[in-house]
Image (tube, rainbow, N blue to C red):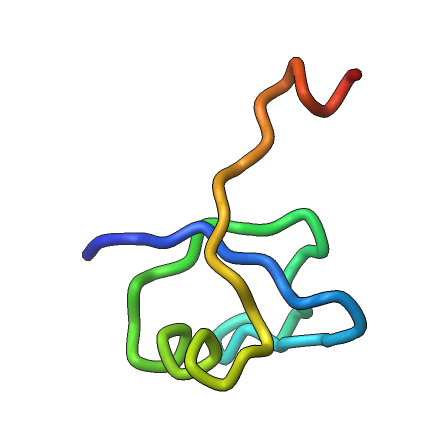
Length: 58
């Protein structure tokens, strides 16, 4: 299954339906499933790219 890298929109908390844990503010890889695509459409998460180690330490 393909994945997407997403993070919550500022001020939003989105729970993973499998783990029941909030999506990390810095973003996570998640399956490109109906659930996560719906969250994108709803505007509570955005698709982004993971920060590299260099970007995180700067």
